[in-house]
Image 1: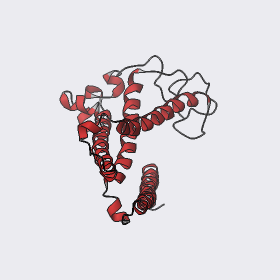
Image 2 (image 1 turned 180 degrees about the vertical axis):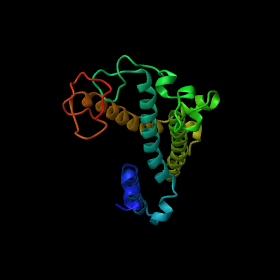
Image 3 (image 1 turned 90 degrees about the horizontal axis):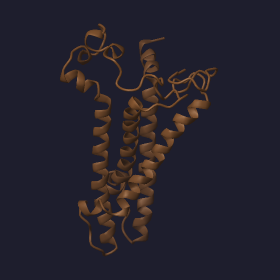
Image 4 (image 1 turned 135 degrees about the vertical axis):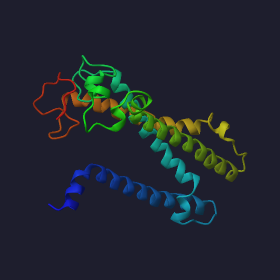
Length: 227
């Protein structure tokens, strides 16, 4: 196996989902501009090209309302699994091991190894920051995505208002409108349902070879065991 093929195989999971993301985003842009132009024609307005469409607030709000919910999902999942447990689920830590865990188990500071990340080998603010870096980055992306959704949503809503010969709204006014919360909560509820379903279904169901599943023959009550 060549070095290139070996590298592709070692990173195939991220490449697979990266390719799916790009394909889905392109598909969303193509179908979105088609729908947008249908509405333009019905209103007696000129259609636009896909290049112009992807710079519109209509496209941006549709994209970011999904992004914020996805990153919120993983932010809450990462944080919740530190303290909350689920008997029988591979998504949960063992029932006798809630919390942040000991330095020895986490292999930090004096318990680190030669190949541990540099910030895991020293105490102080760097270790504290690195110990929470995943949730901090997820949280930052969530906040920025949600903020972008609110801003572009306010612009898109105001454009529709003016098209209907009504007054536009400010950003702060938009945050109180049903349109903003409907867009937000319709995504949140689906994300929370998906996580809850994964946690519970993985207690009783199996997927051979997947690290997200317990080994096929593992008892239902086994907790924190991955395939």
